[in-house]
Image (cartoon, rainbow, N blue to C red; front, top):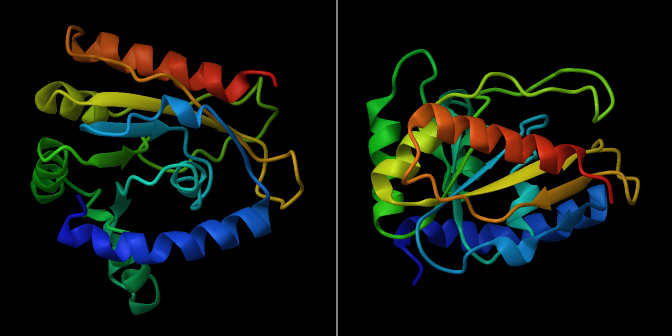
Length: 200
């Protein structure tokens, strides 16, 4: 079932998939790990503004990513992020409106996307050297409250358009219902790091 706020996503997806595949030539492993139904939170490392598309191109599920509200304040980006069913987040405070919308999406059984680092990681180095920024607790907290699975993914390589360079690995879903927030965040972090640094 497609919800009203996901219609734009469905219209946009074929265009974005075609552009992204042709321009960046990404490789994605583990698409079979994505649950076809039920509340899911996609969580991965964040290195580029296009990171969300690496998962989007291998699933038919609309994914509501949390995005900084600056993108919604300029007309030339606002239309895209609204169509892509993103949720604006005011990062200067604890945004209760964004949190409420995210819970609503999960409680109806849809998919959410969160980058636990909270911002782009601009660390320079090889995949073995690059580390993750400290994780926020939003993703694991929402997963516990809404009984959602977390699907981790790790992105490695660069957005150069060279085939075989940009790689994303999607891991098996994580159930954090029996973990406290600290443990859940650590498990998520280890999974994403492993996926980032896994050899072919």
